[in-house]
Image 1: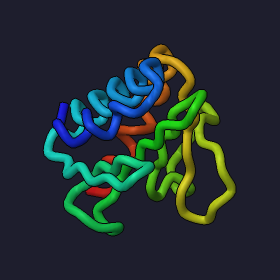
Image 2 (image 1 turned 45 degrees about the vertical axis):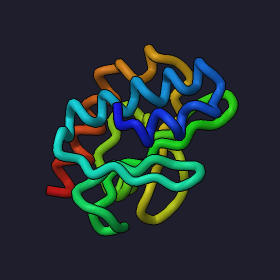
Image 3 (image 1 turned 90 degrees about the vertical axis):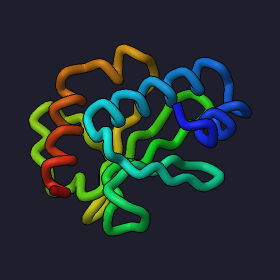
Image 4 (image 1 turned 135 degrees about the horizontal axis):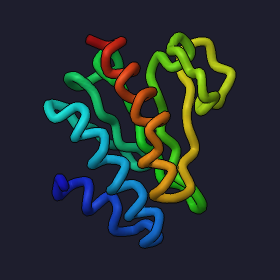
Length: 117
């Protein structure tokens, strides 16, 4: 994992850091050319820097990790994973490693990447 990401995760509770790391690894497996950006609270993954290229945000919280999906409001979500009421973006709250490994989440993530091609 990126050393800056490891520094970002070092202040997080170990289980949340592990969940964030695992989610980030899945994103990078699906989008190996991703540009990783970060601020004090979020990691961003996309095609280039800036808002236009953003595909995912990953935000570690105290009890869960939020996967933000740019443009998620327009994606098919037959399994009802996406939460939120924004006109453009949606998110998924992940509470354990098994949540990250769900095939339904993988399909949703693949759709998000394809939509930004």
